[in-house]
Structures are given as C-alpha cells and as structure tokens.
Image 1 (spheres, helix red, strand yellow):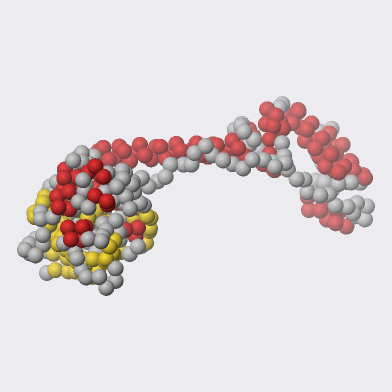
Image 2 (spheres, one colour; image 1 turned 180 degrees about the vertical axis):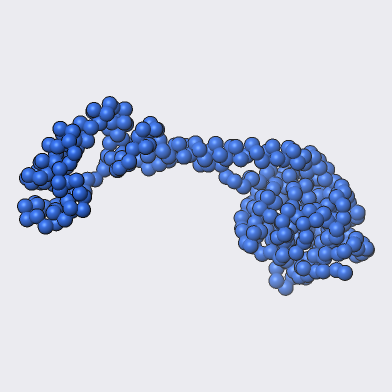
Amino acid sequence: MVRRPVDREVHVDYGQIYVQSGPDSIGPSLDETFAGQSNGLCGAAVPGMLWLTTGLHTGWVPFTVEVHDHAPPLDAVWEDVVEVSFRPTSADSALVQWAGEDFWMLDLAEVDYRVRYCTRGLDAAANGQGTRMDGDPEVDCYLLQFWPAEPAPDRVLRQSSQLAAYWHDYAERQPPPPTPAERAEADRLTRLEEEQAEEEHRLAYERWEWGGQLPSRALRDVAGNVRGLLRFDPDLVHALGAATPAVQRATALLAARRACEAAGLTRLDWINTGLTALADGHPLPPPLDDPDRVWQILGTDPDVPDNTTGWAVPPERPPFRPSAPPLCVHRAAGVRPTRSDHRPGGSRGETGRHTGTCRSQGIGVHHADRDGR
C-alpha cells in the first residue's frame, strides 16, 4: 500500500525545501544538517528535520511524497538517489517551503523511517537560468519516499550529476553531529545563558527604574506610592530607605503637612487637629479615623476650600536602553560554502545567508540560504 500526501508542484527557494516535525527542528544551519553524512542531497543529522537540496534555485518543481509499508523498488528513471534514516519528533510532520511560505502535512507516525530521496535533472536545473517561471518547461523533479525501518547510516545509491557530487563532497567534509548527551548539554548551557541574559535584562531595567541603583529589600517591601516618588527624586527615595525610622516618620509628617498646606486644607480645624495628633504619636481623631467619612465631609463641608491643585510633573529622564538585548531563543544560521568550493555554476556559490521565519499550525521555519542569494 502506498499513500501520497504530496503529489504536485511546489515552490523552492535557494535550492532547498524541508521536512519538519516540530519546533526543535527549526533553524539548523547547513553544516549542522549534513554533519557526519556521506550524502549532501538529504540532510538528516538534526533530529526531526530533513534538508532537501534541489537543482532549481527558485521556482516550481514537481514533487511527490510517498509513504510505503515496505521498501519500494528503485525506478531506473531517477538519476541521483540517496537514503537516510528519520524519526519525527512530533505528529506534525510536514513538507515545508522556504520561510514557511506553504506546507503540506505528511501524517507520519512517530516511528523510525528509512527515507529515499530521488532526483532527476539536477545539473540541467542548476546550470540553466536557475529559475522557472509560469509557463516554463519542467527541468527537474523529485520523489521522497518513507517506509518503516531501523536506523542505519545514510548512503548514496546513485550519483549522476555534478551538483550531487559537489554536495556529497561538502557533506563528507563536515564533522560528525553531536551525540545525544552532547546535544543535551549544549541545550542545558543555552538555557542557562538565556536565563542569565533575562535576569541581567531584568536587573538593568530595575536599576534604571530606581534611578541607577537597585533598591534595598526594605524599599521593595514598602507599600504605597513609592514608585510615584521615584519619578521625581530617586536619590531621595534611596536616602529615605536608608534612614532611621525616626527620620522616615518625621519626613512623612512633613510631607503630609506640606500637602495639606498646598491644598489649603490647613484652614480646617479638624485637619490641623489630625496633623497635631500624628506629630504627637497619637491615633487619628474622628472623622480622620474613617476614610469614607473623610471623603463625605470633604464633599459637603462648606468650609472646604474650592480650589484646584495641579498635577506634579516629574523631570524628564533618559529612556531605558539596555546594553544588550536578551539572547534569542532560536539558533542562528551558520556560514555557507564560499566561491572557493568550486560549486558547479560558481556564481551561485557566494558567501552569505538569507533567513526567513514562519509559524503555522505548529510548523516553523528559520533557514539559511544555501547559496548566499
């Protein structure tokens, strides 16, 4: 029995298209994907991901994906053929175009597969214009076959093109991929670096927010409008935080009296009585011991002054500018092969990279340009 989840023309960019099965397969570089392999057409060194090399640089190519119960026979029509082992890392395996421009779900089980990548017309596509527009004749075509099988080394079954020879040579020169233990340790170190960067970013913002120095634990625990006062005079806030309780109380009393004076409330006897009680260390007398009652009197007492006190305007301060942003979660693309690699059609073997990102239904892409265009 054979199932064909993809049997159509797909669009390739930068001579590549991918199979991805989860967020951990997003964004590997070319050298990571082909690390330790003998073939350079189907990169499978990164768990859950396949990097598929095409002859055409940009345009539409016929592409078929087949899922078999057993290894299918190899048709003589295919010129370059390789095999790799692959295990999806989730139930969401998909054939994904560059930058996630489109994708097709493959409905693969989370089991070990053998994958055969069959190509025809690589050199003709690579050595031609490099692009195929609407109405142009078909030049190259591709078949990707899956069937359940135990993991085994990748191998080249058939080689006919110069382009395949070029990329096979590139793959053979890559070091072996990290072991699962090495990959786990690298992930652990990456998480630690990200956590450290996030903590440094948080502390930098808090230092800026508190006027250039971190607050003491006592200041952090103070209730009330401490952060409102920070906008006006952070040095005063830190000085009050370091002062004795007696100095802090005296400052609070002075602030309360000045506020009442500015609002004209010291003309009211019951306000003055309350300020005196505070200064003497006594409880607030009625009606000041009942906030609801205070607001009621302020709204109904004819002796309350009818004036407006404007909002205090804090001085301007420089905006927060961290020294460096937190580490990005995704991995960066690596360096691509250079002109010195003597790739067939060398004008496409420049140094460089091109990246694109996309997330759609759990499928994500962040890829580097194979050819620097």
